[in-house]
Length: 521
Image (cartoon, rainbow, N blue to C red):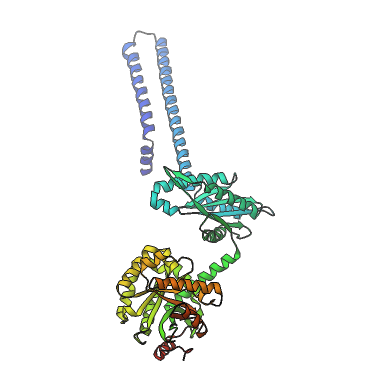
């Protein structure tokens, strides 16, 4: 019964139409019968009466046929319109499923299906399928400054220019945000791919106007080939992404081909990240100490805590290998916090006039409570703020000027010393020195270690004179020993940081208590 009822409900319009036809036929039949029985009865002969009944039957049949024909025609037109609506709806649904609604380009789903098909259809001998992965430089700034409407208009114009730059039949897709991808099949090697990439870059060189504002958009392009670089679609896209990372490193419009060395480096980096996380869990990242020396007396004035990956008493990896990974993954905050705790515990056993210095890396400045966190740690461990020195490089300051001012300001107010590290390496300017009120500048070791070269010595003298003229203490980083002390003293520099091997906490404690360096002893 429920099925019959559903049929009745679904086809209620048809039933109403048929009911109307049947009602009309019944009314006409009744009228004909009434006229025949009550009006014409007895006035016609039997033969004539039969003829009248036959005429009436033909009339009723004709009317019924016309009604059914009209009904059928109406239902046919309704079915035709319904089919057209369904076809349009299915086409729209397919369009939405395979097309990016903003730019009209193919979307990720369509591209991935095309890439799978291309990977399963190897090109002819000497040809390749190429995957181009594109990312716009500076697009986030356009969104943040001028709003998402301007950003959307930029994306639409970029899409149009990409379509003009590629060959007919090449598939251009938007993966999301400002990331685009291109699949070009049956190319005659890297030269043909380079030509397409060059046309894309040239097409995007012209400023993009939205309203009254012109935007300059650069792009990085990573290129990988099927089947030379990868055998599957996802693998080709991953390797194009590695090449894109290299291209974006140039901070201008550029394209790069995938190289196996990139893949090897990424795998090594992933392996180091896993090992670094395990090392943190096992508390293997601990400080070693580099002494700072009074060049005139040879006395130890302080120690710099250098993060070291220590296994069985030896350094497993140098800091320059694992610290960049720690910065990228955010592990640097955990490393820096633990390093400061251990270093403060060690510094409490030194004489009160010996200072502990630690480096602040650019990624740490993302922590807006960095200054408060450092102060909380030294207060908990009982190290006076005056015995702590924060070393920050000029590159870190330039990377995030406002964050650096916020972090260093609270530390200086509490009495922590602040030193400008790597002084003279390209970012030096009086504005930074005056704005931050540094207590010390440290001349980069690349100049100090080449003091025998007159050009390097001239730079050291100039930097030392600049610091002294501003009333700031000047330190030389990377001194080799007493042989170089005289030349540095002649420039007016009174303190240097040793380039010798890093010391353990026990060795640093013994040296601090002795008060003199082994070289001067």
